Image (cartoon, rainbow, N blue to C red; front, top):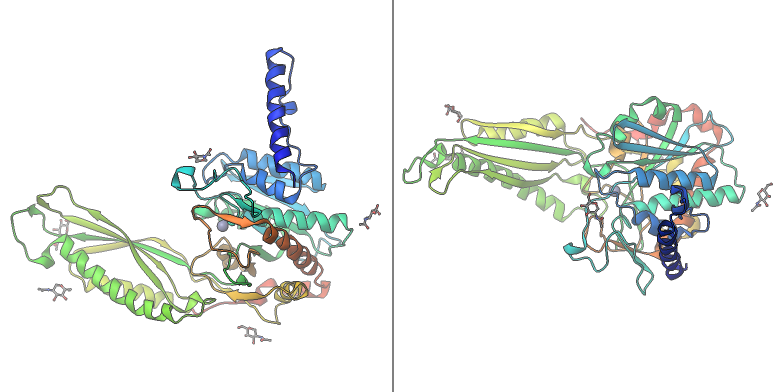
Length: 451
Ligand SMILES: *[C@@H]1O[C@H](CO)[C@@H](O)[C@H](O)[C@H]1NC(C)=O
Ligand SMILES: *[C@@H]1O[C@H](CO)[C@@H](O)[C@H](O)[C@H]1NC(C)=O
Ligand SMILES: *[C@@H]1O[C@H](CO)[C@@H](O)[C@H](O)[C@H]1NC(C)=O
Ligand SMILES: *[C@@H]1O[C@H](CO)[C@@H](O)[C@H](O)[C@H]1NC(C)=O
Ligand SMILES: *[C@@H]1O[C@H](CO)[C@@H](O)[C@H](O)[C@H]1NC(C)=O
Ligand SMILES: [Zn+2]
C-alpha cells in the first residue's frame, strides 16, 4: 500500500488542475475527479471511504458516487433508493446462479457519528491516517465502513476467482443507522424493492472485542425511553411547602423508585456473562430539566429515562411496573413514551439454522472463534428480525479495543485484511446453501421471545 505516493499523486493533480484553470483551458469536471479506484487496494478503498465525511444528516452524495464507482469496477448493478429525500439507500447486487432462491443481504450503514480533531483525536478523524504500526485512525474504521469494504472486496474476489454463488447476494448501505433508521432500514423493509430481494438472511454489524473472539449478535435489547413530568406548587423561594407537594420532591420520589429498580438490575448485570446482556434491564436517568429562577420553587421538573429491556422481560408487566412506580411517587406526575420498541425476536444460533452453520463453518475453517452474543445496545438488525427475517451481526475485529463512537476510533489493517478472508468464506458458504432449504420459510429460524 503506497499511501505517500497516493497523496503525492493527489497533490500533483491539484497543482495540475490549478495550472490548467489559470491557462483557461477547458477542464471538464470529470477530469478533475481523479479517483476511479481501479488500482486501489482494500486499505486504500477504506481510507478513501473514511475521508468522505458521512456524519449523519450530511449530504451523502459523495458516498453514493463512491459506491457507484465501486459497482462499475465490480461490474455489478447498483440502485439508489431515496425513500426519504436526502437519505439515499444504496444497493449493489451480485447475481447468483438461481435468483429464485432466498438471497443473502449484507447490510452496513454509510453514516457515522460526529467526530472532530478538537475532541482529542491524535489525527484528523476524516483523514484515515495510518500510523507506524499499520493502524488506521478514523471515524468509521470500526463502525462500520471497514465492514462495507470487507463485504465488497470479498465479493469481488469471489467473482474474480469464478466462484459460483447459487443465491443472489446484495450489499445494502443505509443512510441513518446512528439516529434510528427512520429514513433507512425501517421504511426500506416495507418497500417493494426490499420485497423483490427475497431475503433469506441478513448480516449486519457487530462489535470489536478485546479477546481473540468475534462476537455474533443474534438478538437486540430494545429501547424504551420515557419522559416524566412532575407538577408541583410554584411559589417564592422563601416559602416552605411540604416536600411531596413540590415538583422536585415528586421527581425525587420517582428517581428513588427507578434507582431502586436500577440497583436490582445492576446486581444481575454484575454477574451476567460477557456475551449475554439480555438477562438484565438497564436503566439510566439521562436528563433532568426544570426551574426558572434561583429564588422560585419550580412548578415543573422533567426526567428522561432510557431503559433497555432484558430479552425475557414481558412488555405488559414492564409497562405496568413503570406506571406503578410513577403512581406511587405522588399525585400530578404524568409520563409519556418517547420510544417504545416491541421486544425483538432472536435468530437461532445452533445447528438447526443452516445460515448459522454457514457462518460457523467458515470461522472454523479459518481457526476463528465466534461467540453468540446479546449486546447491551441495538443495531439495524432489530428491525430486520422484527420484520420476520433471521439476522446475525458481526464485525470481524477480534483482539481490538472497543472504540465504536469513541475518540481515536481505529483498526489494525492486518485485522481488517483477515476480515476479508473470513467474509469470502462466509459469503461463499451462505450463498451456496443448497436449494432445498429454500422451500422453508426464513421465519422458522427465528425464536420469538415471550411478549
Ligand atoms: C464533518 O461533518 C460535520 C457535520 O456536518 C461537520 O460538523 C464537520 O465539521 C465535518 N468535518 C470535517 C473535517 O469536514
Ligand atoms: C475465470 O474465468 C475467466 C473466463 O472463463 C478466465 O479468463 C479466468 O482466467 C478465470 N479466473 C480464474 C481465477 O480462474
Ligand atoms: C412522600 O411521598 C412518598 C412517595 O409517595 C412517600 O413514600 C413518603 O412517605 C411521603 N413523605 C411524606 C412526608 O409524606
Ligand atoms: C396538577 O398540575 C397542574 C399543572 O401544574 C395544575 O394545574 C393542577 O392544579 C394540579 N392538580 C393537582 C391535583 O395538584
Ligand atoms: C436450537 O435452538 C432452538 C431455540 O433455542 C431450540 O428450540 C432447538 O431445540 C435447538 N435445536 C438444536 C438442534 O439444538
Ligand atoms: Zn454502526
